[in-house]
Image (cartoon, rainbow, N blue to C red; front, side, top):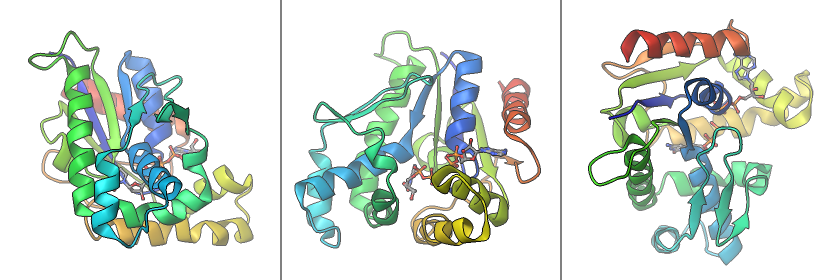
Length: 230
Ligand SMILES: Nc1ncnc2c1ncn2[C@@H]1O[C@H](COP(=O)(O)OP(=O)(O)O)[C@@H](O)[C@H]1O
Ligand SMILES: Nc1ccn([C@H]2C[C@H](O)[C@@H](COP(=O)(O)OP(=O)(O)O)O2)c(=O)n1
């Protein structure tokens, strides 16, 4: 059996970038479950489903033709053969994704796909030898893979998370850019928190607070947790 590392946390805490760096360092696959929710949202907008119609959205996501690249150096996301890796990061998706992510039938469908992807990389019964995986999102440590070998809650202060996302999206962390990012960070986290708990570590989950750590220090902190627990 190989190593499964689960990393959860709020928006802008560094989950995706830190998880990819940890996966590269350890030679593991990388699963961005947030990208799956974003791709589901992209698909619903693309097919014209009303996001307020929960039944229709769930039916549409069940037929989502999604393929997730798990190479941490180039984790491509394709829907029906179209690479949507860049489009799913657009603000229009960030502003709409919570409507899809808070649909419980969507969560069940994506949970099954996420679990299958993790088991494939873990080399679980019936799957040819995987290399292990770092899976990141909001509910990996609690719902999707509570049996992961290492479980981490990566968090940071609201100020740090807003500044990082502002720098990401607007290229600056000045007051205007931070204010423009508030919705897609804090409002979205509030919406997401109605169906998933990702602000407090569950039993057995180690909290890493990156508020006062730079990127490299955060990667090191997570690698130290892996080294101590694996
Ligand atoms: N500890 C850190 N210090 C400074 N910047 C960071 C840190 N961790 C991540 N970042 C940067 O913050 C931005 C958001 O990180 P990301 O991995 O997208 O967060 P999340 O996936 O949790 O939303 C990225 O530009 C990333 O490089
Ligand atoms: N396992 C997951 C992963 C993401 N989500 C939701 C939460 C977010 O609003 C969207 C997009 O997740 P993503 O990780 O891309 O968002 P951030 O990069 O953290 O801002 O999906 C979820 O509900 N469960």
